[in-house]
Every structure is written in structure tokens, then in C-alpha cells.
Length: 426
Image (cartoon, one colour):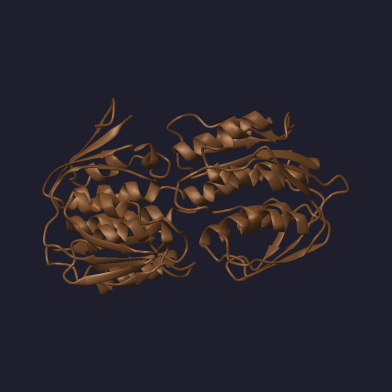
């Protein structure tokens, strides 16, 4: 397996172009199943996850034209040859489970494996299944597969989510576009990626209103058509590079940044003493730190517009160098502090107690071999390695490749010293 060798201690200076959002691209790709006309997605991030999903869509019969190195993906589901999503493919990535609803809406039946993905807690799909059942799908779970049918078609429903689940909200939105009548989603997730999906669906002829609020209404239509849609920029990638610049010091401008979607993170960086120039009109975010020590800041992850759980690990790496003690609370997922012991190997002082981590900042981190445990944890180790003195080796970076496009190239262009090494993990 590949690993990253990082020589830390250098400041970052330069510009980084933010890629398309992984969490949006995956659901936009699934939307192609709802129409027999071509869908073109621009600003597509070429990641392990998006390539995995392209392979699954091809298994279902979707024609995918997406040359390596290009950011435009053409999808054509003119004729589906299968409604079975096998375990071997779905296990690689949780978001692939979202093909279930669109397959039912389009074909009346589907068999989809229960999902895999990062080991950051149980993350059950109960809310997904409850939403589909409310719309009239007959479901049964058998041998690790969800077998679903709606021979008479799906119908609109009033669905109140027990919690604002992003995945369940998106899954229900996708499915309801072809259901008969109106579907109302209450306590819906409000993430920007949901608005991006709604924009794409509406450009395909869907009738979705309220995306970005806690109540979303979808009036079903008989047929959707093709479209061209640009994937929104990745707020998690932008936030990650912002924190990398804050940790290493220097002056980095992020181009194509979704400034409006990063309000909670920008506020925390400023509170920590980082200079942040946010220009929403120009979609740029400039991060500056001249070497003065960061201030300790506590944070609690919350659904959007609160502080994102997907930036919690990166913020913990940043706070490990701050002056004082910060408390980081994880309220979204259980078991999402697996990066804490690895950060401690670099000299961080972190005490985890349940869903809370107490981080006592240290003046300096020191390079060491560490191991990535999930996608966001892996990049927190890169951030820590950039700020540490000496050599850090991050093993198992296949997690990293799931969500960050050309990470080492982007950081190296700003003065980092990161080398990808092939072969066995150390």
C-alpha cells in the first residue's frame, strides 16, 4: 500500500484550487439513474470514491465516459441492464447505497447490498429504509441485501426524520422526484450539498423546493430529462487546506472556495488567532499566520450550519499546537476520535473521554510513523505532519485517496515536502 513521507516544518505559501465536492458528486452521479437521457457533470473530482461509484453504475448498465485526468463526467442510463448492486462494490463506499431508491423509482424493484465505508460508527440505514417504506416500497433485508419492490409505483409521503441525516435526506429527495404526488421531508438535513442536488434535479425537470431548510417539498413528475450541472466546490477540502495553512503557518489563498458554506469554520479559525480574508463574491479564502502561536478554542460538531463533523479531526490536529486547553465534542458520529492516539504519537496531548476530547496544546510536534484509520483522520495526520519537526510517515493512505484529489501535489506547490511511497506499510 502507498504511504506519504512528510518532512515538516516548512511554511505554506501560494494558491490552491478547490476541487468539486465529493459528498455532492456522489449523489449527483446517482441522479443519472432517474432518467434515460444523458447527464453531464462538470467540476467532477477524480477520487477513489467517485471512480468506485462509476464502476457500480456501469454494472447497472449506465454508460460512463470519464477519461482519466478530466473533470467532466458523462453518464447515460438509457437502458438499465441490472437492478442488483452487489456487495463487492457497495461495501467499498457507503454512498453507493443511495442507488436503491432511484432504482425502485425507475424500475419498480431493486436488490442492493447493505453498505460499507469508513469505520466511524454504526451509521445505520434505518432512516433511509423508513423513508422508502413511507413512499410505498416493500422492503426486506435478507443475507445482507435489501430487496425492494414497488410494482404499483411509489407515492408521495409525509416523512419526519428522527434526526437530520444527510444521506437519508438525499436518498428520499432522489426517490421522491418520480413518486406520485407530493413528498414532504421534515427535520431534513440542511447541508449545502443537498441544495446542490436539488438544483441538479430541478434542472432535470424535478419539482423540489425548500432545500437548505429543514422542510423540503418534492412534487413527483412522470419523467426527468438530461442536464449539464457543475458540482459545487468541496467545503471540506477547502476547510482542510485552510487548517493546513493555519497549522504550518504562511499565506495561502484558496481559489473556488465555497465561502458562504464555511462560516462556522472561519469563525473558529479567527477565534484561534488566524487571519482569514473571505471574499464570497470572488470565491476566495486567504489564510495567514505569521508564526504567532494559536489560541486554544473549543468546538462542538453540529449539523449544518454548525461546525462540520468532517472537519473535526483536522481541527483537533490544529488545536494540538495551540496555547491552552480546548475541548472538542463530537455529536454526530460515535467512534470518531480514532485519530487521537495517532496524533499522540507525534507528541500531541489528547485525552478522550466518550464523545469528548480534551486537547492540551503543546509548543511542538515531532515526526513519527502513524496510521490512517478513516478519510478525515488520515488528513488530520498530514496536517500534523506538516507542522511537526522531522519526518512523518502516514500509512494506509488509501483512505486519503477516497476524498482528496491530488493532495500532495497541491500542498507541494505551496512549499510542502510530501512524497508518495509505494510498497508495504511500515
